[in-house]
Length: 354
Ligand code: DP6
Image 1 (cartoon, rainbow, N blue to C red):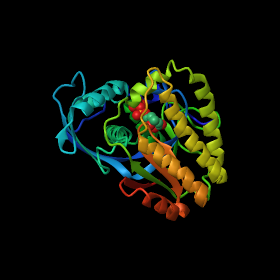
Image 2: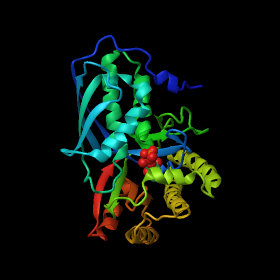
Image 3: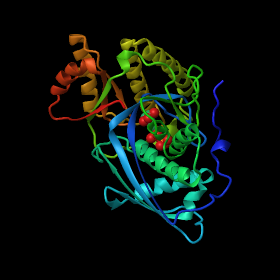
Image 4: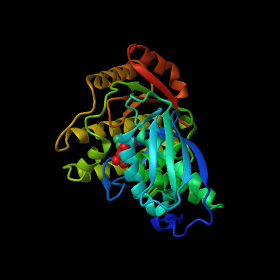
């Protein structure tokens, strides 16, 4: 049996021997796209089901931190957060909640006064989730400081604690501290998987899935009408909750087998079913809501027609918004270019899996 770290393992019980007067850190973290969706939670950032994602490589958050030692430990972490040069109070509120949640695991943060400067490599109004890459970058900075204060940390401990901390900022962020294919949430068929942090997909990945692309069609750049956090809460008393738990468990199992075997058609069928299930859950929540836009449906319908006509093997997924992600291997790049060419007016962000 593999060893899992527990919450107690990540807790810090003693003060560091010495504290620097000034400290600087910098980290970057990529965004990720879930193929098996995290939707619904139990307790504090514990997922209702296991999820699986591809880590992107171009869409990143880059964050710099400066810390100055305080004369006396503050009662709560003192910080300011600047996003793309401007102080951002909305982010500060979210980060405040995050700092409160991680207090037992990073009490040393309160010894300093912090300034963070953060930016994204993708357009910030694009509607691409930035909370995943944002919290993953912050968690990396915190663990850089922890390594500095407690030298010689075990490598696995440091890597998993980074994901663990990121999860307490935003669930999907737990999958943005590593690379490749990530699994977060306990699943009986995925050794090592657990609810507290994300792990690398533990099986050999078939050659067919080693060079994957994600082209993001920006179909709505406005603010979401219902945030993911509110969406998760609506699953609690959702009439389809039990059916969702069972089917998503099956989806992850079949997707895992498809990735190992190189079964591209099963892979495509499952990721599209997952995306549509996510949106179906929103449409059947109380209150109901719809995040897709007419253009989302148009692109899906056109893609299905295109696949029938050309035998192209390009599939889509959706996040909790209107944008559509085209997922395909390098061998399908020409088809993807042809397909994208029919939507001249749409901005497409081209990314690859890290
Ligand atoms: C649909 O991670 O944004 O993108 O934990 O409340 O911050 P919080 O939610 P968040 O939810 C992401 C939901 C999703 C699916 C996924 O990424 O797995």
